[in-house]
Image (cartoon, rainbow, N blue to C red; front, top):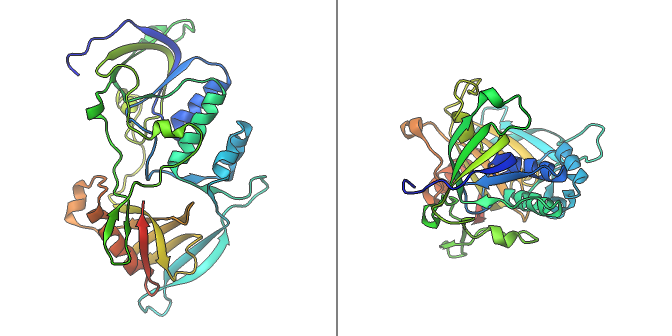
Length: 337
């Protein structure tokens, strides 16, 4: 991008960096209040796999106030129970159910949470923004420089934030990881497209694209900036003296897979925490007969510098560990998202 040249400055009240659920929720709220803003994201599409996929009842109530709760409610899986599994009390190999409980409770109108693909969540929020005549997400647009004029922050008519953004070239877009596949009756692996369907005009946001002119650099002046660009936030790193990580980090490594299971495990459609001598699993049932398995992997030297890797080999290792944890129950799958 070194050859890019900034264009004339643009002005807006708010710039939102990141178009995941947090950024889109911010954009929806701003749109409902008729506050001028722009929203950018470095990715060329909405979420195509993985990521967060759970709704607490309170969140559904907030969505209901924007008249979009029915969009996920009609396709998601409603959670009613949670089960806790642990090692057998006689110290034999295997797990047993220790107790069950209601997944949600309290004096609230929405009694049950929902699990659904994050792509559906983002599509629903995008539809809500359109209904409020809000802006479209500027895809393939990456922030490159950020500065703050502290002297003018108290002047509400000023634009103290200066953000430079680059419109990436399509070949430089960061692609979603993953290897959706099915297993044929003969045991062969067949590559699949993955579960990306949704509703409305969502199909426009599942094919990688760049908004505006590729290779262009722009300068945006704003009164406020919302950093909604995830746990490894670029925005936060621009102000290391003001924003820093608190608490203790963990060196644990988890494998996460979404599958249509073939199993004799009796609580496969409940949220389950499973602890065994071979590790632990958090099981979350999802839409379309999918379940998500968060599998804590055994410690290895390679994990000291572990990064997120989504491929068939990684999925195979994680699932091999899961099968040990589920013993004496069996679990296989015929589709992995």
